[in-house]
Image (cartoon, rainbow, N blue to C red; front, side):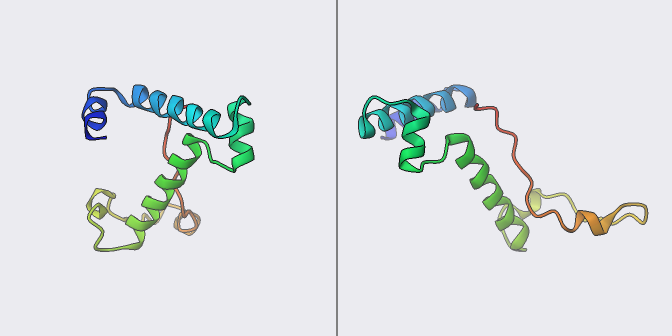
Length: 103
């Protein structure tokens, strides 16, 4: 497994995501037989790789925002309130979706 990880370090993000998708498709075909990827995913109730990444990104963001001592907290911009902004609307936003070009 370590050799695979080292080999993957030289790939770009798009190439790595493409490999992950191929591996997930093969694993599903092995598990459920010769049906389409989408049908197999629905049958086994698997999220797509893109959906899993979005879910993980949202979860990580919530952890960072919710924990003042989180190790990644320093990466967030400082919170400033402008008298001309609509702060009451912005306070209701709880999740920021991450850009993901894998699909």
